[in-house]
Length: 262
Image (cartoon, rainbow, N blue to C red; front, side, top):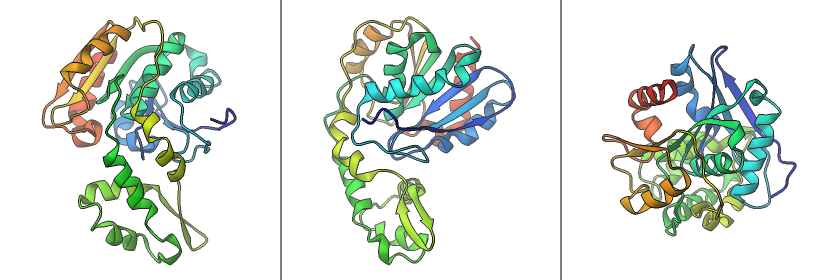
């Protein structure tokens, strides 16, 4: 990955400790805007666009260690000047948050990992399908955003998923473009589904939050999680799928507040 990739972020709130949010694949920092507003005025929230997403720079490959180091440098140059921060990562962002905590423990006070584990996820077929579906759109013939939704309906049946993915579609000077780096994300799916081998442990409090209906955290993942994060507390959110924070925002904020204040 190019070391000079610049990261975009947005700070929400004016007082309190800082909570850094790292989004998942296809996401962007602003996905956590309502969560961040719900944490005011007790916390400030830094919503980060990860590389190849949102308004952050693009790279030529995907590597969790390099991304975590990039985030660490970004935090050291900004909000960490006031002391360690809390870090919340969802899915791909959860893996980056775990690597960040293991490699830069001095930056992280409390860690929250949402619906992902430090385990190998070898089945990337769902994400391959989504990326291929987006890439199949001929952007040169699009005249309006709604047309993109209509064209994707046959390949991606869930309108909520389409709406989430189409947040990455941008219009400029009368033409459309993808804000996310679809080519690099498609090429890097195997790495995105994996997790690097790292030495050491993170001996701070860790909240491991799972969606009850999600397949991304299993009983088999627990030994690997606790080996790296011995102070892990697992909480399952009832009736939630993989996108816990958007499906059950009130429960998510309530659990998060209790953990950060403990």
